Amino acid sequence: MGPFILKRIGQTLITLLLLTILIFTLARLTGDPTPLVMPSEATDADRTFFREQYGLDRPLHEQYLVFLRNILSGDFGVSFRYREPAMNLVLAAIGPTLQLAGLSMLLAIIIGVPLGIAAALRQGSWFAAIVRGYAGLGQAMPSFWVGLMLIMLLSITLPIFPSSGYGGVANFVLPCVTLAFFASASVTLLTWANMTEAMRSDFVQMERVLGIPNRLIVLKHALRNASLPIVTYLGLQFGLLLGGAVVTERVFAWPGVGQLVVEAILNRDFPVVQASVLLTAVLFMTVNLCVDLLYAVLDPRVSA
Image 1 (cartoon, rainbow, N blue to C red):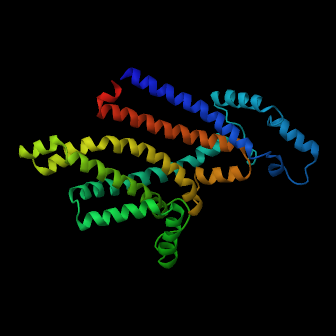
Image 2 (cartoon, rainbow, N blue to C red):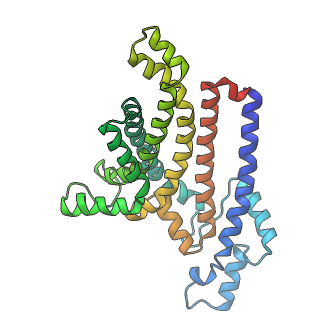
């Protein structure tokens, strides 16, 4: 187990290094932020001073080395627009995003896993056809469209839930359902496929011959074997939810990292963009590292 953990941590660190290069390069491809940050009445001397103050007048390779040195010391720079430490802004916004993504993932598991198990046990039935239709719709409809339809139906036509804002329990309902709809569809299909394969395996047939109760076979033995690819996929799905939250947060005016990143990109606020993407990437890779370790616990052959 030890070498496996060290190998995965090393791969994560290399990925982070490559990610810093990618983020730094793409951010600067958007252009010079000076015209957007400085007021129209600013003089050429003011604009030159701004570039010198933030190191934008240096060659790109020097800017990257300074950027890498600073983030290793925990300094992600100061926002061009807000004049505050970029990481402070990101940390203030990451909480609502994690709440939204976490609750959406939990809802997707609560919906998707039972539906997948039930459909696998009722192959060819009308229930399985309904589940397949639900999963197909969930994967086909874009999240932003689902969000807009939910707002129209449950906020405007039937004023049950608020259409925007953050704070109370009611504010979580529509954004969470929007994100969980797509995620639960994928979890349903994956659970269905793996449970079907597990129920057809030789060891399940043998347990039936031995007279073991069907509920025990399904929940203890078949589900355990089917859970390995599901656990791996859930780690990837969490990253997709963090990415999907960018669009969903714009639809529901959610004060998370998605809103912050979009505004930072529009204003070419490099420090905020870099801090936001890096922190989100670290969270995503941490979750996947934990999933890999859990996978190794469930199947010791992985770490062998």
